[in-house]
Length: 295
Length: 308
Image (cartoon, rainbow over all chains, first blue to last red; front, side, top):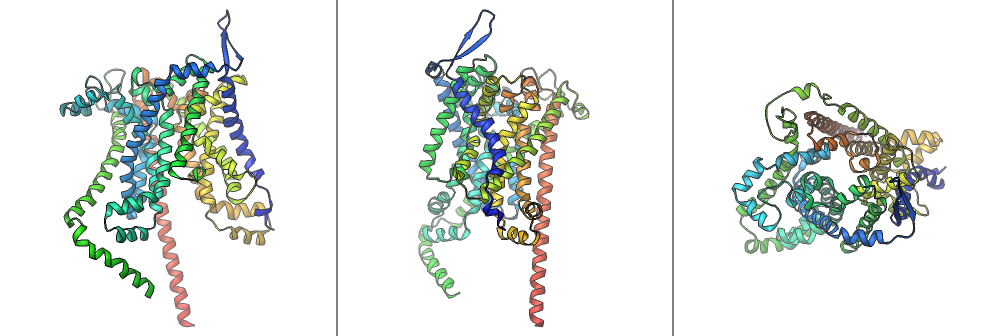
């Protein structure tokens, strides 16, 4: 009678997990294998790959592209913090003051992301162009001379600067930050907030002691969902950046698709993945979120 | 009752005692309250800046090849949305891939989600971790790893099939997570009751389980479609010579994006948002009707009690 308990789960799992195994996990292993191969080019300009535990693919490429690695993590970190600072108040207002407009407000948050990623980024190209309203206004307010001094922009222009790349990354992943924050804030029991106001008699303190800690799962999910894709991103750096803003994604992409230097590209790609996993593990420990796999 | 009243007064006393000394004036509290709302409003406005630029420039008649500065109002691109060479086949390919990958990923993912939510089996937490890993992987790593598989196995031509394979792959995890959240909810006893009545697994699944998890499955399918039609990175690595709509835009961005791209971008935006808005309205109406129905039931029950 009770098929739900007796029947093993494996037949239901098999097709989906097989797909993930063949097209996600095995490719990871293949990429690891490929990253230890050596390329030789014969007299007919044909590439040949031989597996010989060529660890120099790692050492050479990491030392050659360490500035791109560092830049990727720096840009992604700044963009994640910026997205958090922008998204938290918005998620807070929707969750606690949205009332019957909650769903409509959420729809407004998601709506912009229905336009294609590339079109959005190209729109930023228009907005930040040299003679655009934004650029000339900021220049007139002498804000660009400040960002110039900080090294965020050059020659009082916005396009082709780190500032443009980082702000576009912030914008492009904002929904990934707002939604998890909203979900965790929305779950908080109103009575706990009232109790906390009674206890601490100070809104700021009540927020720091009760609301914020309770929203930590959302903070965890939101920052990861922003940071991970932001680190691997190469579109923003390509469309809005310059050779000085190249990120590791740009290097991997060109090595794979333009130079066909698969072993080097695989080594870089695998390194990025490894750093990311270590980072996630440490981060999960720090924030004490045990249910990483269920976010 | 009595207990609630005592906690109320107990909690209220210290606050009232401390209030005059510590609390800022009513005016500042109001300013602070409004400041947060204003900030949230500004963020929403900021979210729509690029969208308004996209829509505005879909009515532009650019002076040169680049549609970057405003020149002249024109409806040409809206009259001929497929007027730029190659754009029609790109949009068609994107829709085909999105449609097929949504179907495959939704079916595979829903089955796995049922297994993960319903059964306790050996390897369950490992499976959960395996489902989570692709979502924690940067797209470029995912796309490049799949490319190395195709290179190593010497897959003859990259194209439609490899794009489809890739899209199903990255969609499965999202389906599992979305549907699982829903499966945890519905009452399992409903299915057990159905099993007693119908005594057929397939019928129980079709008549009880599926309708219960349908909202989750629908949300997952919508998410898949959106992720697939928008995907650039994984597709770029595994597309060979095929060109999807995002790849078309990327190619065009080097030597001038045709205005038609803005038109189609605006259309996808309007259809997506319109669909979500409609869904929201239907949900609201249903919630109201259910509330009214249950209120009616309560009234009838009370009336019956009164007569008895």
